[in-house]
Structure formats: C-alpha cells, structure tokens
Image (cartoon, rainbow, N blue to C red; front, side):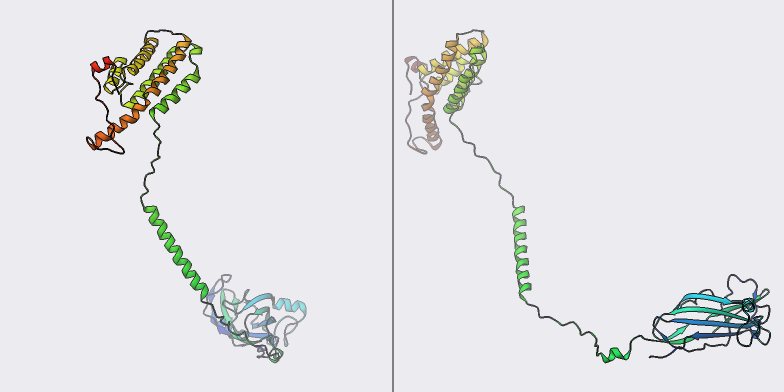
Length: 372
C-alpha cells in the first residue's frame, strides 16, 4: 500500500478572516474563541480508492454559546459530501451522555457544552491528499467568531496490488510504422495531371467561338415546284364546289411564280400585258407567250369580271398551265449558262461551253414567230 490516512486531525483553533455567514447578525468578537476547543478526527485508518472517509468535528464551548457547523464541504476541496449529522448538547442529553468525560446533560467535565458534527465524505485522488480547513462559527448573543481546523492530510492507497506486477503486464508499445508503397501516390499524381489537362482543354473549347450552323436548303427547280403545286391544285377540286375564282387565282399565282423564279420576270407584280412584254424581251417564243397570255386573260376574266367558265374548261386550264411549264423549263438551263458567260466575260466559258443564243427578238421578230 502507498500509505494510510492520519487518524486524527489538527485541534488548534484559528480565527478565520472570512466574513460571517449570512445567517449570523452582530459583530465579530475573536475573544469568544479563548474558551472554545475544536478537534477534527478522521476514520478509518487506511483508505483505498472508493472508500468513504468519516470526518468528525468536536467543539467544547462555554454554556450558552451557539455553534454552527458548515453545511457543505469547503470550496476547492477534493471531496464530496455524502451524509451529515449534528449532535447538540440537548441531543446528547436525550441520548444519555456525550463524549468521554461528559455527563448525561451533554456537558464536558469542566461544565462546558459539547457539540459534535459527523460528515461522510467521498475523497477524490490517489496518494497524499490535502483537504481544506473546516470552519465552525460560534455565537453568543450579538457576538460571533469563526474557528477553523488545519488542513487535513490523508493518504489514499491505489487498488493495484503486487499481483499485477507479478503478471508482468507491460505498457503498450508505440505504434509500428508500416512501409507504404509509392505506387498509389504515383497513380494519384498521374490522374490529377490528366484531370487538369482535360479541364483546361474543356475550358478553352468552351471559350472558343462556335461557328454558326447554317442549314443547307436544297433549291428546287422552279418547274418542279410549279408542277407539284399544279398537282395539289388538281386534287383540291375547287371547281366541283363552284369555287372557280379560288381555282383561277391559285392557277394564275402558280404560273406567275414559276415565271418569276425561273426567268427573273416580275410576273407577280405586273399586269398580263407587262408580263408578256417582258417574256418577249427574254426570248420566249410567240406561241409560248400567246399560251401564257390566253391563260392569264381567262384567269383575269374570272377574277375581275365574274366570268364563270364550265367545269371542263377550268380543269383543262390546269393541263394548259402544265404544258406551258413543260415547254419552257429547258429555257432555264440555257439561261443559267448565259448568266455564267456574261459574268466571266464575252466568249469565256464558266463551268462549261458557251452556248451561242440569238439576240432577243424585237417586235418584228415576235410578229414573225422567231425565237430560240
């Protein structure tokens, strides 16, 4: 064992400089302590961790002096209060005696009153432990004084025995260092570099201006568009419902759009006479111009003069428009070659041989029926 607790504490009373408790009223009178005797006793003689310590405070004071014991352990003490009991002179007289040398009235042999306070403590710590001094207040009428014990020193044994030492239980060894392979760090470094390169590439690609995507629209030939529009008009059968005006308006627009898209004639904005004049200037045969004139005049009569043809004539007008498109569609290819040659210069072939075309006939040529 490491040691045992001292059996008896200090008995010399001391005047405490601390202020009086709040329950006391009056003035401090240290001279009251001349006839007051304070003793402190501890038990058991030996302590181990977890044992309870019994502290007994005994006070012999003149008759008529009131003694007040502390209700709690002193501040900053290394113990905890478990139980507390106080025996006054009156309590001792009822039990039939006090301490050794006291009579059955609870008084000492010299006639003084005997007071006893018993505390059960739980002590914290191992080895030499010093408990703080305990203070007792005595009071006579309006006078009071404070007596205190010395520091109470005890020794608390550990619960460890020699059997543990004989068992050769040794302390834990320090943590063993394990050799680490360098490959995980190498792979992690390579992955970090690849990730950084990919991030930089992605950021640069994101900042790069994107070229505008222009959808390629296939330019269909004007004759193909016109023939398809004529087929749709034929399937609508507007004449069967008596819608002759709608029928001829659609037929005239199809024919004029064909001439404008295929030959550059402003047919949609011109009158029939102006359109036929432009067609002659573009080298159209007189027969073709007359077919277009007749078809346009018939459409104008229905649109503006409220002329109502027969159903057979209205249906036959679609066939007449289809014949005009088929008879003049070859002229669009020849005209394209002429435009290329004119852009490159006279006598220079652009994308193929130059096609020699006769000069556009004037009024006299049209009267004679000449043309390409």
